[in-house]
Each structure stands twice: as structure tokens, then as C-alpha cells.
Length: 114
Length: 111
Image (cartoon, rainbow over all chains, first blue to last red; front, side):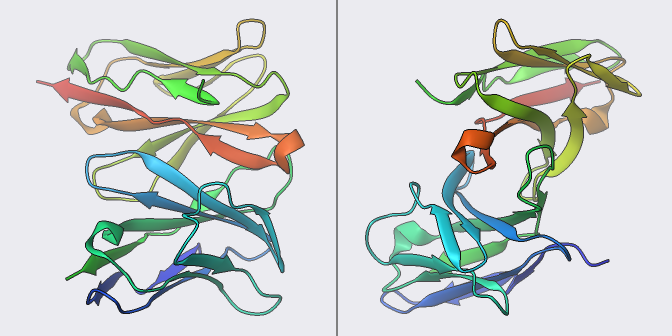
């Protein structure tokens, strides 16, 4: 039973390019979270999704960032026109979406914008 | 006020000592609670769930105080390998079962 899979593990983009981060949840999990973590800082919530539905995107920057979790396939976090300040670790977690269930994290994608 | 608040620390702990720290939450409708551990540059990993009656897992004890809206984590006989950031997590059913993370408490165990 594979855990949460994120790819790529490391991603380098030049300023102005697009970054696509993928997250495949654990088997049986229908809810996905995305978090961003800057060096020496805590996890910052970005977005909470259910398949084909965004439940809470209150942590997403208003521009350039979008997320989706289609019926088939992984969840995608998309960052358009990346800037140096987007350099961070992006973690995805998945859960069953029920009250007493915990979430499990992927190993993260480290984005470096040069 | 943040939904979930933690003392960022660091808590400097001599090896073998006991350390305890709390996490407060603001939403009284919070339903379930967890402690996660995050090592430097790694993903957070579930340490333990927190039950209403309190629970223990080896050297780790978690408590929930619903009246005062806080949970606690106690680590006995600290090991060097316990050095990490401990994240408090609260599930709020009214928010679609969204898990909300605290900022973390850093613990440094020293010889």
C-alpha cells in the first residue's frame, strides 16, 4: 500500500516559467491538502481539495497559483510565472476526509526558482 | 487569533529529562486532535492521535483538555533522537473536516 507520492522531488525553474507539482494520495483517500514551507518556517496551509471540488483555498495566493484534484489522476498544484519568492518545499497530504482520521504526507517537492 | 497556537520554542532539554508543551485551539467545535513530528527538511509524520481520556505511547503522553481548549504532549526520558519540531493538528468538522496545523514547537535534546 503505497503512501502519498509526490513528484518531482526536486524542481528547478527559471523566473517566469510554470511549475507543476503532482500529488497522488494514498489508496482510499479522497481528500488532499497542499502546504508550503519556507526555510526555517512552519507549514503554511494553501488549499484543501476533494475530488473535483475545492473545499478551502483560503491560503492560496490570489494570482498565479491554482490547484485541482480531478476525478482521475493526481492532484496538481500549478504555479504560473514563478518568482524567486516561490522557492520553497511544497508538501501534499491526503486523508479519508472523515472526522477522526489523520492525514499522511508525501515527501514533498522542493522548488527552486533561479 | 490563530486557530491553533503553539509556543515555537526552542525547548532545550537535557538528555533523559522530561519535557512537556501545550497547544491551544480556538474553535470549540474541534473534533479530533493529533500530534505530528517534523524533522529538518523532511515531511511531517504522525506521532499520535489524542483521545479524550488521554493516551500514552511509550515515552509519549498526550492529553486533551476540552474545557480549556488545549492539548499537551509530554516526553519522558528524552533521547537525542527526539529533537524535532512537534506539530499540533486539529480537525474541525464544521470546516469540512479540514486539518489545521499549529506552527510547531521545536525541541532540542542535548547530551
